Image (cartoon, rainbow, N blue to C red; front, side, top):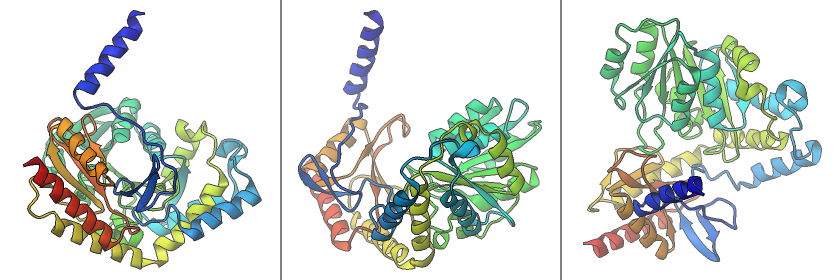
Length: 390
């Protein structure tokens, strides 16, 4: 069949270019050490930054809620799926991140859905979106689905944003950015972006998937910079540092009510199981009260960066748990990842189109579940692989 043959040729090209991806099947909880194909691996591949995905209190909260509420949401939130844990979670999240006075929050099943919902509910044909070039794919997809005019500016380049916005007439304007960039590990210049939003009468959409729980005493990147404004629409995910699943949007009450009423990704989606909301509430208590996890994580970040001195690959500037080592060629990045796997260490190779061509990398993700011994084992293995490559 010609259509099948065409697909197979495209897949063959992907494999030849080192871009084919394979799912790994794990037989253990998330953690510093995982079980994969009968082996125990030291893993630096998860976004479980605080080690909460298998935390006893979080697991117990999910178990108890399952006994009380069952395992399914049953219906969309607006029909019959909005349970007490959902309502309690939204109130707690709004109070915790506080992007503006009297903020409300709205929970979603994933960060991808949340970002699509923000942009399609708030932006339309007569509007303009200005987005950092390295934003996550869901922000790009949301901008395209909104049908607003869409322009990208250079990564973190506020002057380029100014040039992009100059002379653009629109009903509404939106500056859209990751807070912590998922493949770079760096932090967006949010104070400068908010200043532009205020001066140019624009909204600031902030995707804090990788900052929530980690930065700003756990409250995220806005708190890290001490920012709050009615112009901010804040998205945080709950499957990374919070260790569970889902996402939320926090903003001015009118923004949240608009999304609740009109965002198709919310209106027409079955509610996540209440047990997940209960688990997130337990995780949120740990994020709020246990600063020791973040202190340990920061010490691991510093140890890793010191331990990579002398490697032939470029370690990007990052003060977050995301520590990218840029290899360059996609096939070489896969080879190095495979060499680490042979040594019992799992680090993913990230390749185009996730990152620009010529910048394939190892994405090292550190977690409070790791020990200093774990990080030392990783840096030693990296140096051993580098010596073997010389």
